[in-house]
Each structure stands twice: as structure tokens, then as C-alpha cells.
Length: 436
Image 1 (cartoon, one colour):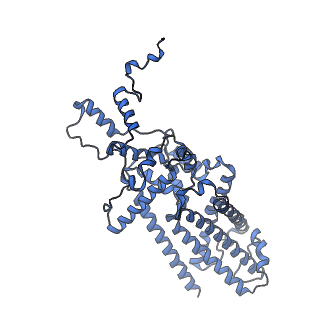
Image 2: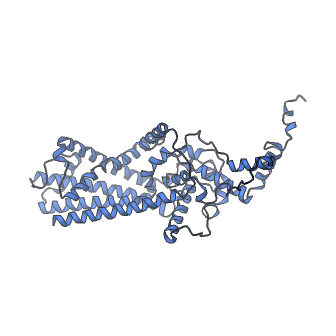
Image 3: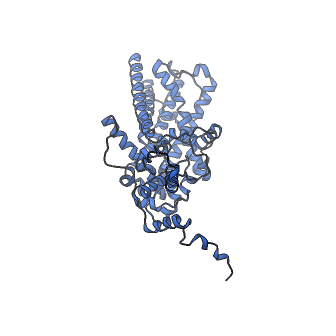
């Protein structure tokens, strides 16, 4: 019987890891559909960003109470799952609490620490559920989250509560079996929260206790494997991608916009035709119309989005009733990547589907509403820049489609003819300073 359980566990583990690796490979492929960009400079500064932004959650601490609660859930996810290593090895080897004989009292201290974190995660997840569904903070009831995204957040919080409850129940029944002197359950010392739960299970037979403990053990590890494979389809993928996204964050001053060499060259060649190389190929496209025209970093940003809505809550255009929502920009970019990924899976290569990120996923009205104020970039806790995507799509609108409001066209004409947005001759520009 023991060998059958071990074989089932190995099979479950292999299937879970294979499915996760397959989806992770698809996500990597989708990200690399973007244009190449070298972001490997200044590694020391990049590691500092990784430690402060991803690991230390520096930006979250603008709201200390929420940051501390988020840190509890985050630490619980990272640290408690270290215990998964022991569970996996126990499942493969057919042992029970494999590390205890080697760690002794340190093991007791570690599990107690895990239990405090587990209890903290349960409490904080309940608070977060209340904030989303009872208090209904504005950024959590925004239309961006209608449908699946709102359910997704709740599913994750419920899953965390269930996993932590299974962990505590497993330990509590284990402690009762230890107290009963069951040979298979080592004396590991007392676990604080398990000890509080022990009276619930006192008086049960060893057979019933073992059944509960084993059921919790299997559901806990199966739940973790299921959670692992749910992550790539969820906004909680940021748990993993926040680290590379923080490492590859822009190091330039926030809001700095890059000129397009192709545009500069076109202007130069028009003004000085003799400088144009005879074999110069015309630029493929100005700006971005689809994800293939964006940088891989922009696409990594989209997959890293936490959908927390801090960007949209900070956006002056959104606050004044405009259609623009930076969060929706990132969600739409991710949706387009996923649709293209499915297209590639089905056809072995991308087959034109007659759609594009611009127009089909993100509207002209949204793009025109952006003031390029950089508030969304400043607000994002994981260094995402919706502004970069907006700017590239607007460039395509204006330079590829000549699609701009008349007011903008007047400004463009003034800049072209008068070298300023105003309709004044350069020779008359300083007349305001002349005494009447």
C-alpha cells in the first residue's frame, strides 16, 4: 500500500510540474514575441531594485498597514512553502517529517514559525476578502474587473485560506497522534496553534486521526500543485514575474520618452537628401500596432500586472471620467498575447487573425485621453509602465494612420512651421518682453 501511495505521489508531482513547465514555456514564448531590447546594464542597481521593489515591496509601504498585511500573505506564500520540500520528499520516500531527526529543536521552531505565518495569512486573506466584497474599495469594483478578473482575486484568497487551514489541521492531528504514542508520528515538540486546535480532535481513534491527517496532507500538496498550475492563468502570476520585472525595470528618470531613430532619420533625409544612404530600407512601422511592435519588456510588464488598480486610481484622466484606465491597458495587452499564443499553438505559427492590439483591444479614445503625466508608472508597486505602451500605440495612430484630432494637427503644424506649439513666428516670439 505504501508503495502505491508513493507511486501515485510521484505521478501527481510529475503531471503538475510538466503542466506548469509547458504553460511557463508558452508565456516565455509570448513575451519574446516582442522586439529585442538590451536591459542588462548596471547589474548592481538592478539587483538593488529586485531586493527593494520585489522582495522588500518598497512601493507598497506608501500605505504601511496594507503593506504589512500584503507582506504577511507574501511571506506566508514564500516561507511556508519551504515546508513543501519536506512534504515532497516524504511523498517520494514514504517517510514522515523527514527533516525532524536532523534538525531537532530547530525543526520545532521552524514549524511554529510557519504556523504563525499560516494563522496570519488566514486573518489577512479574510480582511482582503472583506475589502473587496463588503467594503468595496473603488479600485476593486471598477468596470475593468467585471467578470473573471474579480472572481480570480476571490478564488486566490479562498485558496490561500483553505491551504493554510489544511496545514494547521494536519499539524493538529499529528500532535494528537504524537500524544497518543502512535509509532509512526515522531515526538516533534509542541506547535503553538496546533496545540490550540488539539481539543477538537481529542477522543478520536487513531484510525480516524490518521485518516484526517493523511487527507489534509494529500489535499494540501495537491492544492499547492493545483495552485501552481492556476498561477499562469491568473493575475497572481506576478508572484513569480515581479522579480524579473523589477530587475529589468527602467533605470532612466521616470517619464523619459525615447525618440525613434527611424523618425529622426526620416526627417534628416527629407531636409538633407544627400545624407540618405542609397540602400536605406524604409522603416517597417512607426510606433506599435500589435504586440510584435512592442518591446519584450512591455510584454513582461503585461504579464506582471497585479491588477491592483493603483495606476488607474492615480490616473487624472480616469479620475475626470475619461475612458482611459492604465490597468485595462495592461490587461488588454496580456489578453492579446494570450490570444496570439493560442493562435500559434493551433497553427504552429502565427496566422493573421485580422485583429491588432490597437483598435481591437485598446481604443483610440483611451489613448487620446492620456496626459503622459507618469502617475500610473509612479503608482505601480512592481515597476510596470502602461505609459510606454500608450505612447507607442499613439505613435502608430498618428504616424501610420494620420489619426489625430484637429486640435493636435494644429499643434503639429505649428511645431513644424514655427518650432513651437503656438502660432507665432519665431521672430515675434520675444516681443512680449518689449515695452509698449
